[in-house]
Length: 380
Image 1 (cartoon, rainbow, N blue to C red):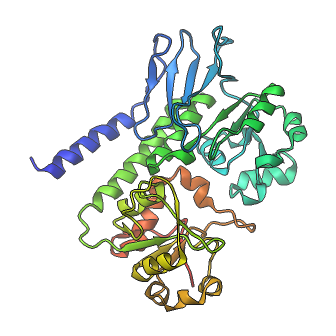
Image 2 (image 1 turned 180 degrees about the vertical axis):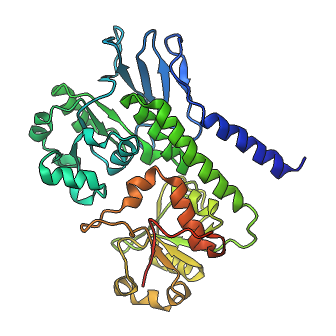
Image 3 (image 1 turned 90 degrees about the horizontal axis):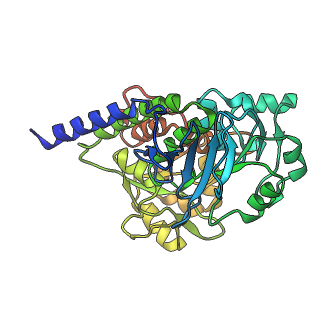
């Protein structure tokens, strides 16, 4: 039996497991009832009743040994005495989202109409949210340190989905506790695996009372992603890919183990800045970046640039590189709002399979199989 056959058989079996909803069986308190296949940032455990506890294991990037627990109350059950986490009623009717990716997960489960508040409406791609905002059904609550708590409280949300970046968002969580507004951390952005991000749909499904549907959806996405990834294992030539562009005279590039680098590798590419061993994004000098860029076959994510004129206007030296001369520059801006928000960071957080199909079409157009770019566009 060949190694590739064995691997394909293993994947097929795993995908079969992904497609089998776990359901809610009679279990003991603390027993894990859902162990993610790809995500590292959460798990779901049982209680003695119908309620469950969502454990957020990596509530923000770099969090080590920090666990945030959310008691998802069902059938009028209460959290046990001494429970120090947050209590959220299952199947909330009024939801506030502070990240656009949260909206995409909820929309994919058919519950987008329950969203009553958002952060940064002008950067949100979801059409329902735009229409609901115009009619007054959804309100802007602000962002970062500028949350409008008066508006937030007036919305009377059943739950607020928040996130942390470099650390705990103490100011926000403390105020929400003061207002007695339930909240929970969503850490899809801290996942290093594309499918790890996608699997957070199961966490949303647990809260919305739709875990079986969420597991089925994730299974479909994972199956498509794995099929595409496996088809690229035999590529003999892997083009070098440069990422990002300068910001305030400094060029930040992703870590070797990052989400976007994993996508590039799965699409049959090679990260131009790889090999540093860094586990976090790092700055490189303009000189070093230009060397990497000069050696690259493709250039992705050049900040907000959507045209070559825009890109070259930032630095005329870019015009001398072969990647620009050959028109091999692409950005994830095909589905953008007028303010510059990109659906790549919204629904793309869930649809890892579509993102991967885009990247395969860019890096290996001979294997596109008729796929039309969805999140990406070529700079003209």
